[in-house]
Length: 252
Picture 1 (cartoon, rainbow, N blue to C red):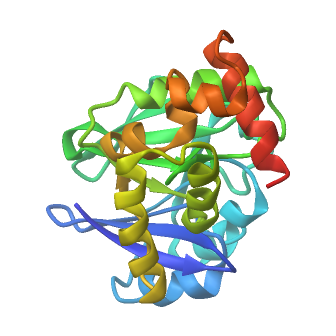
Picture 2: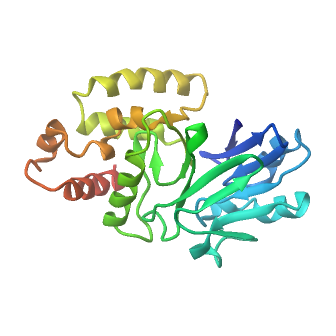
């Protein structure tokens, strides 16, 4: 399984997946046609388009790519009226095959009501769209804070070596937010060196891993006593700490 990171628009990432055994080519969240097609052209085909959610900056390439390559579009059944050109409707927990690769659909609402992640368990890879970012999480637009809190809890229990490919290059802003409210985190300070180096070299900060995020992503560290002290939420529930952090991040 080969993954190519495609930079799109201002800060979006689309991902080309090449499965060598059957020569199957797929793309996750094609933000727009031109940038994605430049990469796809090397393979001269596109079998599948996978959409994590319906937002335009994740699906705007769907129709043009489908028309050019006769691709099949895969997405969550609850978004069948919002994902352009959708062909294959997935349910939570469903296993889908593309070439010789298998992925599990994980329903993770919050950012949108129909958001899903694609977990390639055998390859230790997950595509999280706009739910889990490097050092952050997505804004809550259609769901609730409880939805997002529960969705992140689904993701944080995955094996720590799982590589996370998310929908945007938000890591620098997320890093600054984490440092403000988790200033004594040595793992975070160590990660900041790598993040700043990558950004200075115009390189993606993606992928991260579940293990890295558990150590550094403030939205996955809700039990931490130092964070709770900074927020003055020592005796609050994890969900209350999450909501406070999400509100603070919205205005950061």
